[in-house]
Image 1 (cartoon, rainbow, N blue to C red):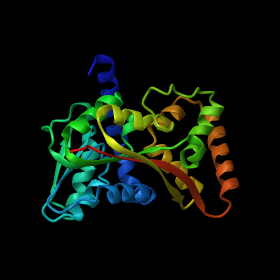
Image 2 (cartoon, rainbow, N blue to C red):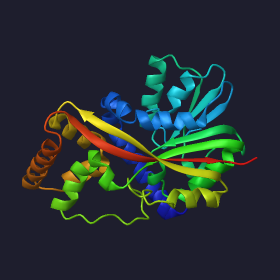
Image 3 (tube, rainbow, N blue to C red):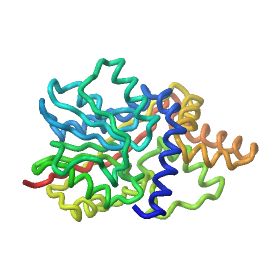
Image 4 (cartoon, rainbow, N blue to C red):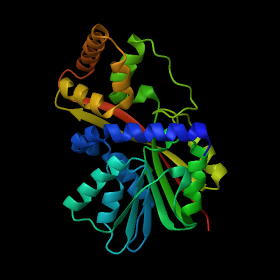
Length: 282
């Protein structure tokens, strides 16, 4: 990895470590929110007892822990760049008495595993943040056994994800922040149709398919939504820290207005992801 990409990776590690406490606090909400994506990944991988499964960019532990729970003799290797996130995984695994796991802090572009090591690989919402996506795909292909399956999810277009654009879109509009270039790590980096297909195809994957997965983020109130998003969203918190008090008040007021307008009763904000599945042919 060159120096520029290494710097991005180190910055990401620091950011995820810093926001790990927020992800732990809101874990039950985010796990319910991301349940459809987890289920879609597991349904494709069809993990079998005795297999070796790798979960990349595991965050607070899904789908890895659910896969491990369903296997008696297999083992799930859980990886993330953030040691603080992985500590949350350890705590959750201990509480649920899940022992058939191996937790490894590592970078996806330099996986510390032998070729052809795993029967399946999962990666829920990690790809769009990888500094070098092609290197990541190459590494995933390398560690998969021939015949192994890979499944990942990325976020679809911003217009289909009001759960995050309600706050981040408002921040960008009122603070006049330009949209990030399409080739830098970010939430919607992989939303363009065919982008992930091209990356995986170049790595050697076959039978590549894409499918939309829908979900909703539910909150008890707009206040709860605001609190959660400012505690788990690095880009949200960073932007708000650069705004003066008057601007922060204006942003919050506008976010509350548009959410209450769209959800006058229960707070239920739509989300749309893309499931990408692929096979390493034998």
